[in-house]
Amino acid sequence: MSDITTIEKEALASVEAAADLAALEQVRVAELGKKGRVSGLMSSLGKMSPEERKENGPKLNALKTRVDAAIRARKETLEAAALEAQLASETVDLSLPPKAGPVAGALHPVMQVFEEIAAVFGDMGFTVAEGPDIEDDWHNFTALNFPEGHPARETHDTFFMHALEGDEAKVLRTHTSPVQIRTMMSQKPPIRILVPGRVYRNDWDATHTPMFHQVEGLVIEKNIHMGHLKGCLIDFVKAFFEVDNVEARFRPHFFPFTEPSAEMDVKYTRKGETIEIGAGDSWMEILGSGMVHPNVLRNCGIDPNEYQGFAFGMGVDRLAMLKYGMPDLRPYFEADPQWTRHYGFAPWSTPSVSGGLS
Ligand code: DAH
Image (cartoon, rainbow, N blue to C red; front, side, top):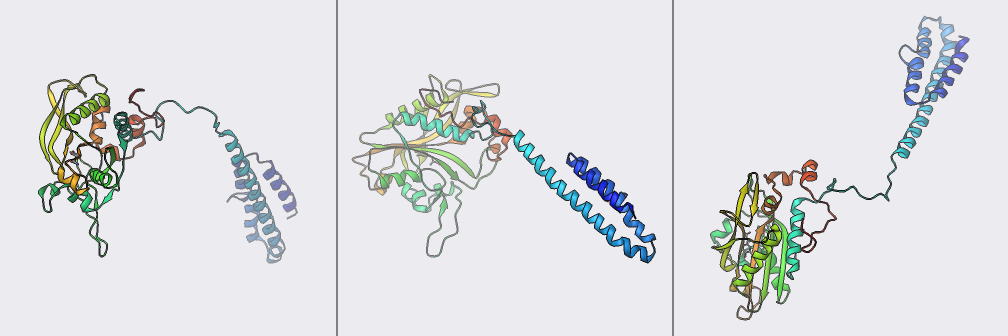
C-alpha cells in the first residue's frame, strides 16, 4: 500500500488541473467511480488479512475522503466561475432603445379599444368615470328603473354573491350603467362621462363570455335632445372606424332606464374575410342608447324638468373584433402570448384623434 501517497498526489493534482465541470467529472469517475482507482483499492480490502485490513482500512478511507473533499471544493469553484462567466456574457445594456413593434407585454386589443374610445369621447369633452365590479341590487337594477320582478332583470343572467349576515346579497355588475347612478348621486350636472369597465353575466359560448367589457356614456345637461344623441354617436362611429361617412339608423328598442330607447345600426359590407363599416347593404347593431328616463333622474335627485340627458352602452369586445378582424372571442381570455403578440399593441403608443387612433 505504499502507493496510497502517490495515488493521492496524482488524484489531487488532476482535480486541480480540471479546467471545467466536465473535466472534473471525468476525474471523479476515474478515481471514485465504480471502476475508479480509489474504489478499486477500497474493494481490495476484502481480500486482505485482518491485520492488513486494520492497517490499510483507515488509510484508504482517509484517501477517499480527501479526494472526495477536493473534488467537491473544485466543483464549487468551477460552478462559481461558470456563473460569473454567464452573468458577464448576459449583461443587458439598459441604455438601448426598445425593440420596435409589439413585444411581449403588448397591450390587449380590448385595452387598446378602451383607449381609442376614450380618445374619441375625450375630444368631445367627456371624462372617464369608474365604479365597483361588485354592486348592490339598487345601483345595478332598481335605481335604473328595473321594477322589482320585472322580466328585464332575468335577461341579465346575474351572478349573485352570498349575502353577509344582516346584509343583502351583492351582485357582479351586469352592465356599466350603475356608474351612471353613482355619478349622478355624487356630481351635479352638467355631466359628460365615459365608463369603461368589466361586466359579468352567466353565459358562455362562442360569442359570450362570463366576463366581458362595456363602455357606457352619459350626458346630463339642459335642453339635451335626441338630435344630440344621434350626432354624438355618428361622430363617434366615424372617428372610431376611421371612415369619412357612415350610414346609421336608430331603431326603437326597450331599456328600462331610457325613454325613448334605440339601438344604433350601421351599414357594412363583407370583403372576403374582413368587414367594412360605413357603407354597404347590411345593417349591424353596434350599441344601445336613449334619453335618460325621468325616473332615473329622480332616483338620483335630479329634476327632470330642469335637466335631460342621453346615455349609451356598447360591448367593447365585439367592437375590437370588428375593427381588428379577430374572428373568435374566446382567445381574448386565454392569455396565449403568441395571440397577444399577434393582435396586441405597443403599450406606449397612446391613441389620439388628431395623431391617429390605431
Ligand atoms: N346597459 C345596457 C346593457 O348592458 C346597455 C345600454 C343600453 C346602456 C342603452 C345605456 C343605454 O346607457 O342607454 O345591455
